[in-house]
Length: 468
Ligand SMILES: Cc1cc2nc3c(=O)[nH]c(=O)nc-3n(C[C@H](O)[C@H](O)[C@H](O)COP(=O)(O)OP(=O)(O)OC[C@H]3O[C@@H](n4cnc5c(N)ncnc54)[C@H](O)[C@@H]3O)c2cc1C
Image 1 (cartoon, helix red, strand yellow):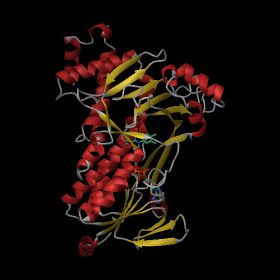
Image 2 (image 1 turned 180 degrees about the vertical axis):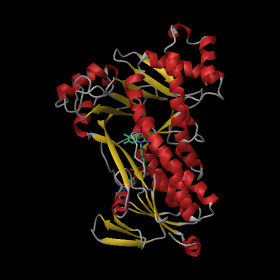
Image 3 (image 1 turned 30 degrees about the horizontal axis):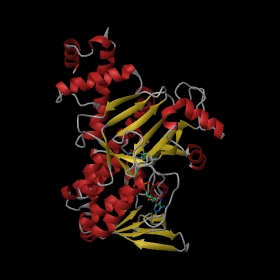
C-alpha cells in the first residue's frame, strides 16, 4: 500500500497503462482509458484477426443487450456497432414435431442484438487504434507480470524472444484462462479461486442463407430447440447465415440432472449416428443444414466454465477485468455485457475518485465482485430454463402471469429476465435477490387451484399484490 504522498505522485504519473488481451473487454477498456489521456498499450497473444483468419469452427455470435450498449455508448461507439448488429425481439421455440412458438423477450420494441464476436472485436480494435490512439502489439503472449516493478513480460510468438514493458497500471483482460490471473494467484497469499465446468460442451454448426442470400429462419429472433438435457440455438448473422450452437453433455451420466437418455457427444461417433440424432431431434433444422456432417466432424467441441476468484486487484496497480475476473456460462447472454459493464463502473469511479487509483480499484472490486458472482449463478440457472423449461406449459403460464402483472404494475414487478437484460441500472446482485423473492411468490401462485383457467383473474392479481 502506498502512503498519501506516494499515491499523489503516482496519480500524476499513472499515465502508462498496459492491458493484457485485446479481446472484447480489453479493447473497450483501452478506448475508455485512452480517451481520458492515458497512454495505452495492449499486448495480445493472437495475430491480428483483421489480417489473418484465426479459428475455423468458432464463429460464435453473441447477444448484446442494454448493459453492453451502455458500455459502448459511454465512449460514443454504439452507433458503429449497431451497423453490424441484428435485433432479436423474442425466442422462437422449435418443437420436436417441427411446430414453433414465439415468446417475446420483453415489452414491444425491446430486443437483444446478435453480433459476431469476431466482427465486434475487429471493430473495437479499429476504433481503439484509429480513434483513440491505442497501440496494440499482436503475437505477444504475456508470460509474467511483476507486481512490484510493474513490468509486463511477454514472448513474441514468431521470434520467441522475450521482451519487457514498464508501465504504471496493468489490467488483465486475457479471458477465462487468463495468464494474468494465474500470475497474481501464484504471487498472492490467500487467493481464492474456484472453477466449475458444466457437463455440457458445445459445437458450432451453420444454417447458410438461401439461394438469393435470404435468411432461412425468422431473422429477428433467437431460435431454440429445447430438448431437456440438451438444446440447440441459432442466432442470425448479417450475411444471412445462422450460427447454430449445439449444447450437449460430453457423456451420458446416470444422475437425475444430466444426460437423461443417451444423448451425448460421446455417443455421436459416426456420420450415421449424427444424422439420425439430428433427424430425430431437430428435423426442421436438419433440412436447412447441407454441410451438417462435415461441420460436425471438423468443428471442435468446447467446454463451458464458470470462474470465480478474489481478489481482482493487487497492490492497487494490477487489476483483473472481464472474463479474467469472472468467466460465466453463456446462457444469460451476459459475459461480454458484464465485462462492458466493468468498464462503465471503472470509468464512473475514475470520475468519482479523480484519478486516485488506490480508491478507484478498491471500490471497483468491492462493487463488481458481488455482481459478477450473481450473474454467474443466474447464468447457470438459465441453462436449465432454456433447455428444459422453455417448452414446459406450466413455465410458460408462469411467464404469462408475470408479464400481465408487470404490465399492470410496472413499478411493483420487473421480471427477472428484464432486470438482467433491459435494466442496466439494476445491479445483477439486486436482480438475483429480487428474482428469488418473485419466484417464491410465483411458486405459491402456480399452486393455486385451477390456476390454468383463472391465471388472468382479479383474484390472482390481488393475491400477488398481497404477497408483495
Ligand atoms: C459459446 C459462447 C457464447 C457466448 N455468448 C454470449 C452472449 O450471447 N452474450 C454475452 O454477453 N457474452 C457471451 N459469451 C461470453 C463472451 O464471449 C465473453 O464474456 C467475452 O468474450 C469476454 O471478453 P474478454 O475480453 O474478457 O475475454 P476474451 O474475449 O476471451 O479475450 C481475451 C483476449 O486475451 C488474449 N489473451 C489470452 N491470453 C493471453 C496472454 N497470455 N497474453 C496476451 N493476450 C492473451 C486472447 O487472445 C483474447 O484476445 C459467450 C461465450 C461463449 C463461449
